[in-house]
Amino acid sequence: SGMDEIDDYVSQNVREIENPIDLTGVAEDKNVIYIAVESMQSFLIDETLHGEEVLPFLNEFKEDSYYFENFYHQTGLGKTSDHEFVLDNSLYPLPNSAAFFTHAQNEYNSLPKIIQEELGYDSYTFHANNGSFWNRNVMYETLGYNEFFDVESYEFEESDEIGWGLNDKKFFDQSIDIMKELDEPYYAKFITLTHHFPFEMPEEDATIDQFDSSSVTLNQYFQTARYTDEALEQFINQLKEEGIYEDSIIVMMGDHYGISSYHNEAMANYLGEDEITPYDEVKLQRVPMIIHIPGHEDTGTLSTLSGQIDYKPTVLNMLGIENENDIVFGNDLFSQERKDFIAFRDGRVVGEDYIYASGNCYEDETGELVEEANCDRIREQAEQELNYSDEIIYGDLFRFYDFEQGEIAEENNE
Ligand code: GP9
Ligand code: MN
Image 1 (cartoon, rainbow, N blue to C red):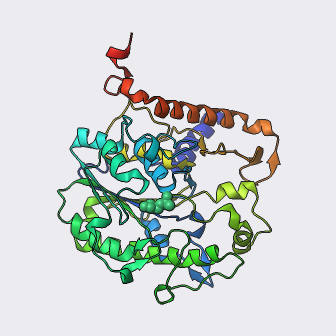
Image 2 (cartoon, rainbow, N blue to C red):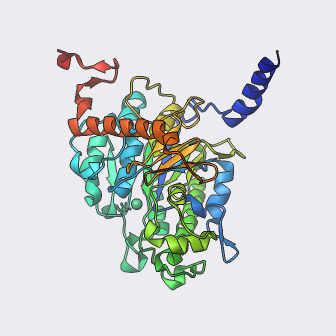
Image 3 (spheres, rainbow, N blue to C red):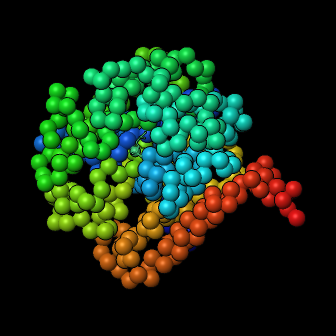
């Protein structure tokens, strides 16, 4: 009958087109290189300032990669560290503290631990800040990182610093030398620093003019973003020169917003809008998420509603690890069957059709205010998930869970 035919058509031409990609095991025997791009927000992607692309390199790189344009950060007070926490565990960050500080002694079923156990991968972090910042030196051990190349691993002078410390170009430059010595395949995380609040860039290093608005922060934001874009390009070129590029899955992601709602007026000015509504503010929480796989070119943009919670299941699937008993709150980004909402730590929720923010419900497509009841289901389900995740962390409940068997560990099952 007609409906069968339509259904067939839709399943082959619409659903399949929407998600035709099975990447199970595509990363097997390859390095996984993850780059946390400090404070990078998606509104800069494919955008211009003074008629110039702000991020010429990322705009190009994303074309030869899978680029997720509807990908949200989900961090709370713990900022960069929260993003690391979400990525490695597919649990939510905590409501009132940074889990990196308050729950660094918990038991976690973290990504580095799983890939060590299943595949023998060692995991490393590269970040030119003090090792104790965000309590990383303690938490990384808990999460199963083999080594943390912190500020002590880099040699530099004051003139090599921008803003918070060693500039991203020199950071990547020296990181390559360390990388070359590592046994492949490995998991390597890089955390950039130059594009960090307050986004100060020495005149002579700036390659794009500032924006002109009432917000110095936003005005400068474009310059440090451009600098980091150049640093990423340089790093990718060096990975190619060293022959690492072809053996690696490369993931880049913005860790969290850089421009807070304090700068809404200037932001509206840049975006050419009258004002930034709570709906717009939600949309501004999108961060770039790019997955590059050797041999997968011309892949382009996917509009899957997604967030940082999805990182761990995605990476594990690419590595061919079936982690069926894992307790996670995210889905493989490429799966056909995904949850239909993304929860923010502060209670805001993005659904496929509706967005819940500031106690109001908005239609996703238009940004129009609609009956609050439209948001009830996603709001309640998000709240439930956040509570479950908090319960796990506060109670250190993974001590009692057997991930092999997928059940409460026997000695605690009385
Ligand atoms: C600090 C860097 C920035 O090491 O990761 O942290 P943030 O202030 O963005 O949380
Ligand atoms: Mn950060």
